[in-house]
Image 1 (cartoon, rainbow, N blue to C red):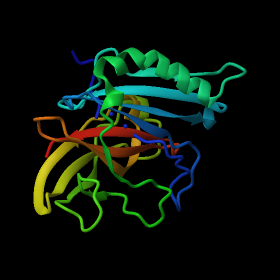
Image 2 (image 1 turned 180 degrees about the vertical axis):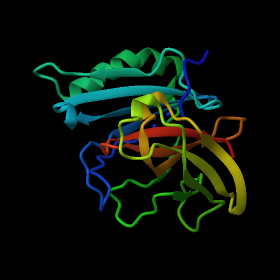
Image 3 (image 1 turned 60 degrees about the horizontal axis):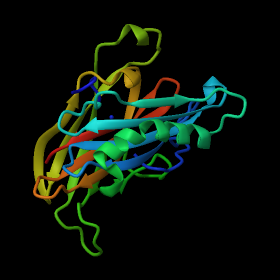
Length: 242
């Protein structure tokens, strides 16, 4: 059973911000938890400090159906701490404790998958709309590479976003290279975005993960960073099936 639409998020890296932009918010850290053995579920934790809310530590754990891109029923698990002794470690621990039953149910820690590429905004001069990677962690020339391309497009503005002075947008994702050959597969297109990303004004392609289930087709996860008008950055994990 599916709870609600998502297109979903990925590793522990402290992302300080985008060069050349005026920042007022925070950019979340994100940590993959792994895949179910059949590749049908991907889990990740997203965490950070909400500075605009008075330095509130938060942590959210998501479980994504990789066929539909939706949240698994009963998830995500969300934690925000406002008590006097609150800190990020406490928020993360409480959040992972709440999510532990789902982590064990899908045996996520047994199947970590491969971090095939990572393109954080702290890496100067890196492209923001494309990422190229291979599915095997080997040395030497790239073998059978894949390239994902991110596009932005206007979407209807929700009433929750009407006060913004910036245009609300969605995104499209296309696999333009598949196993080293040109490709025009529409990997995923978002004409609406998840509720927690509904007021996004910019996107960046931030990475890719790959998992190969035994006896089944590989699962790719595109990591997309969404920014709201206050420059808060949050991750979306987009399942891709080449």
